[in-house]
Figure 1 (cartoon, rainbow, N blue to C red):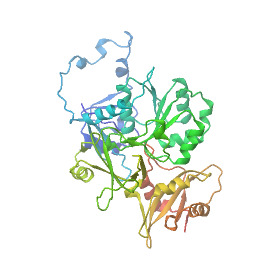
Figure 2 (tube, rainbow, N blue to C red):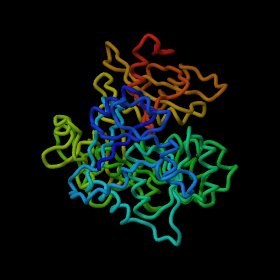
Figure 3 (tube, one colour):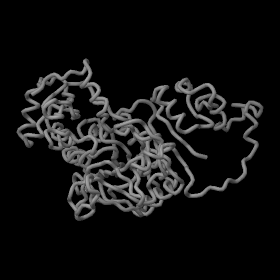
Figure 4 (tube, rainbow, N blue to C red):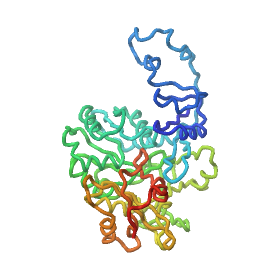
Length: 443
């Protein structure tokens, strides 16, 4: 059996694209999402009385005649190889069309084995609260890890709210929280946590995008007894690649940790393919048992991503220091080309977020006839803030080289992100270049 989880918030056309990729033989849905599926696809409703009755111990809840008799036909054993597909997940699609990522049994076994190798010796099992979606590689592999290690998993249904999360931490004595950067920011800046007893909380694991140093320091000040662990991964690396484990690793601010067991990594000059020395910028390449089998039905995309030696090209601009810690600078494809200079948007975003009146920020390339591209900022201001465009541009200009200055500013109510917390820059580029997304100011 191969599983292929999908985002329930996806549109019918997005679901249709995934169905075309994976060719499922059965779907599991709820009554509120099943309308997005084609009528020709057999579908089991998870909130139907019949399905729920299968979990009831009450003899009066259903009679044997109400339950389909097909479950009496037991399936025989199936031969499965480690190289066989086990799951099809979908790339985040932040820079292009969504692709089906084929993960094998060996990929998933390697994830669990790596996590088991650095497990904690505990008197009682961990209680894991998942705030990340389980259709995403991050949440998917943490569910596997929890099952393999006998942990308790807590899931908060419905729309995410920090207060509901903190209430669950108190109610279920949660020891570990798996989450994304926006939640860590909310925990660090807000006062919601002060209203709940969270003494059980030991670790908060954050993935999806690097945290800025100020956020880490704010979090540590509010939760001095909680270890904040960061990690780095792609769907193509089975949701794991670099991570922090102990307090010594966590003290490396700005880093997302060290390489997981059984894998290799190197930094390569994206132009020449030459391996870089420690602390030098380049594209991160990874090799090992975590690397996907390939993109479903797309051999050309697979060949462009994984070379003949098995190295996966991540497309991320990074460096690895002398101690083996990874620092992520930006996506190579998202670097802004200004008059021949390369400007990392993430660097400007982190700087903008240090302004006390800015709650969210995103920087994109805006087309310019003379410079090629100029940095443009989308900014979410704090309520009742009178911060204007000129003040923002001046704030940045004082702290960066001239070629990195913000040249255009637009205010927005919220920054679009995918479920893992990554900025959807392509949506902002469309907004900026459309008639409805004209900037508030430019310089």
